[in-house]
View 1 (cartoon, helix red, strand yellow):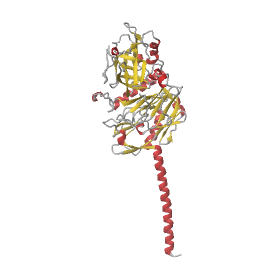
View 2 (spheres, one colour; view 1 turned 90 degrees about the horizontal axis):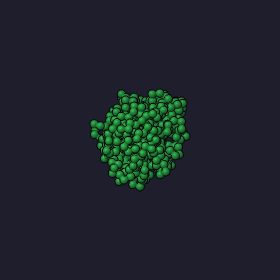
View 3 (cartoon, rainbow, N blue to C red; view 1 turned 120 degrees about the horizontal axis):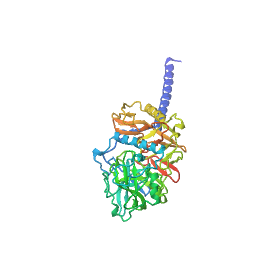
View 4 (cartoon, rainbow, N blue to C red; view 1 turned 45 degrees about the horizontal axis):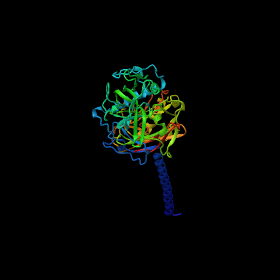
Length: 482
């Protein structure tokens, strides 16, 4: 064989080998690319940062009984707070911790039935033992109260039961709110509940306080205090509630607050979506079948929704409500495991079952057992190793500086619930954004593995979350809103 022919064969062999190698490399890159899209988020940094203007939800079809959900501190809010009154991120996280403390206290400590509401409405404080209710949430909707109706902005909260609003004449005090304060004397459908009514006694389990009796009118007086020391005291009453133009609830039980103080962000009060008999969910059970759903927007610059009644659920994955934790008001779930970047964390199932798990619309940051949080943080940090770390903020200890990046890659985090339901968190559901220079992992540890795990509202962003209390289940669907 000539040297030329031998050289040609060697070159041909090399080229064939190179082609196979390149082909394998191309296939490997394709596989890795597919792996990345399956187990990580490619995120444009601009999508995480709130805009100075408001953008409506892109959801095309919602049930008719649908209300717009807005963040009380964002540009979509009509509450128009003074900039000096808007809480800092540290304030928000501090208030969130107080809420969590109260949730744990409420779940683990027997309610003191000896608590009582002071009869005088000009009282400025509630009994010290009564601070068992959790602090108010940070998303609100607008509903109508009275005849003729007055539109009021109410924070909605799945962890609270009593619906209440500030009322004239504000016998003791009212905090500043954006909407005109409701005047029951100008409504033809308003009436007080009497002290002798059986529904008056339901306030004990709903608020943690014994109701009082107004000396002059024999009216039932409620008192409710939250974990952040906010409170409302007033008359337990009934009134016409207008959800939408076609959905009207008569004789709705609510609190007409005459002495109110606290951190309600300019809202007029609170809409209780818990599971107690006096909650909105239970009072409207005949009409809406104890079903409601919401979608919390990706940033405070977007609008989500809260709907009542059945929803199209062909793409919703349901997990059963748990009966082992949650008390009478909270919605409890069975959390079985967590995945980060496609890797199931090595966490014993007993770590989650010892304290149980609840889902809560008002808690901002998801709280995990310390053992689970440590494993999640370690795996998350592995996937974020190329990004510069910065100091933590309050309860958040894993933060990054993304100011030099237009896009980032974030490991996907998924929760495995009972019934084999896996819920993939959206990118905004994994991160708490202070600025492009400080973006933090939006999880925090509980004090002890035996404390209840709380699935907070950051993790619920853009998911359609469906509560079917009658069916004993909670469902999740991706891409519920923008």
